[in-house]
Amino acid sequence: MTAPTTSFVTHLECSETGEHYPAGVLHGLSSAGVPLLVRYDLGALANAVTKEDIAARPPDMWRYREFLPLSPDIEPITLGETMTPLVRVPTVEKRLGMEDILVKDEGRLPTGSFKGRGMSVAVSMAKAFGVKRIAIPTAGNAGAGLAAYASRAGIESFVFTPADTPEITASEIAFHGAKAWRVDGLVGDCAAIVADGAEEMGWFDLTTLKEPYRVEGKKTMGLEIAEQYSWRLPDVIFFPTGGGVCLIAMWKVFRELQEIGWIDGPLPRMVAVQSTGCGPIVRAFEAGEREVTEPWENVTTQIHGVRVPNPIGGRLVLDVLYESNGFGTAVDDDAVTEARARICAEEGFHMCPEGAACVVALEMERASGRIKADDQVVLFNTASGLKSPMPPLENRLEPGQAVDYSVL
Image 1: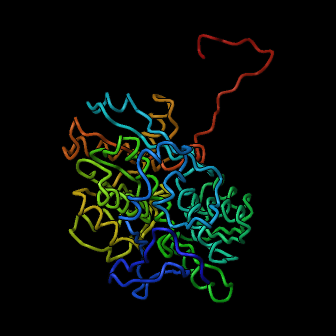
Image 2: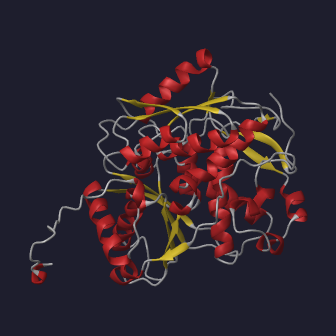
Image 3: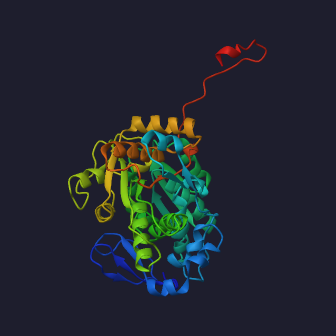
């Protein structure tokens, strides 16, 4: 299947060998079995658009069209991917003795999570290539995103998610029209079902990093941060890391912006936030390794977005940590649960567990000294807190009974 090449895409590149692949052809992994990355003619791109041009456009992710792989004749599959705000957390700042902590709130996007960015671009490209059926393994939010965008595009979708995926997210997947199944296992077990069924079912495998375009959509997070910081960048970015696409994507676009001279000053340190109950990236980083050599065994975390025992992009994520002088941090689930409740009550900001994990990681690294009082820090809240379970409300009053207002 072929589609017109984009205005500025020159080729796709194997992330390990550097081998080139044509841009106008549907691809999965490279022949080396590793992710492909989209490459652009950045000189031509820089001559075609200015920062002022972008600032004059509607405030959505498509304002960065030149940095994305869709050619002018490809109509984006969109549900209204608005730019997301940077939200200050003053009680966290006060507690940590800091003055510049902002949370990038991705819960404002369609289907309530950052997954809308990657899915919008990936499904747009899949439709342009003539794909009729897509399958995906997911911890939850990616499946909801695929289901929504595939339905919008008229593409049949199949989604496989772990049995303990939160009910609201699992139900959302099916509600958006996907053929959805719970799987008694982890996301890797779901991925095996997708891979094993590809030939018989004829579906395109949209597993994280098995195709090149979800990365490109998620680059828009980095583009938004650069623009929101007046084309400079914060000192540190914390991101909850499962497959690691977002760290790879942001670092990729920061390098692209640096090459065309659009950003001033140093690039940020990138921090991968994982759980003590599933932290293969953090373990490999702390051991000084360049790849995730062993899958994480005995996964215990209930922070679903970081529950990826053997990320296919582990080497690329580790490259980002080393190149950016960043690091990995593993947080405890109980501390995350407490932080999520505290921030919701203190700040009025309902973070998802993965976002709260970034707050806990920041608190740990402020105590360790790796984060300084004057660092500009961006944390990512990757989804609306409404997508994750909350403690039930148990307090009740009976109508017609006297109310003891002193105990309310």
